[in-house]
Length: 165
Image (cartoon, rainbow, N blue to C red):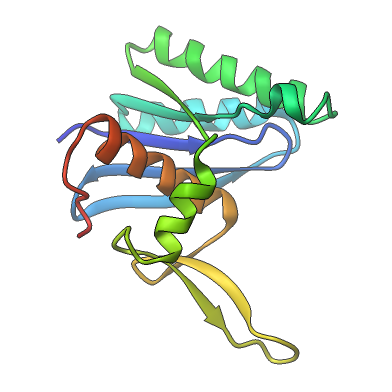
């Protein structure tokens, strides 16, 4: 199987990662750093250690719509760096727009993406909290997005059966 890394990049906080090697070997994790270059260095190390062959990077169509926030330049720089790292290391790279993220998330909420589900978790005090899980592993928002980007690549672009069904 091909080793694939799906990334929901941030640039200024947390980037979510979903690494897929085969149906039984995958990892979900995050990389935290306040500076885009620090995140880029950590992701570069990850790419080399895992010998990634395909890199999937979530991109956004919000560059125009959201205005120019202080986080946007860092995100743009990180995405550019990731594309460069892929080019330099012979890694196949795909940019996947999140413009349909609401649609994909709705499919997950409706349990149409096996393994990915939103669970209500009881807390010690107050109302229950909704937490995304993948095969019973709790996820943060960035990790959930990295899983969804992989799902879109695998099922929509590659037209393969979802391996976690």
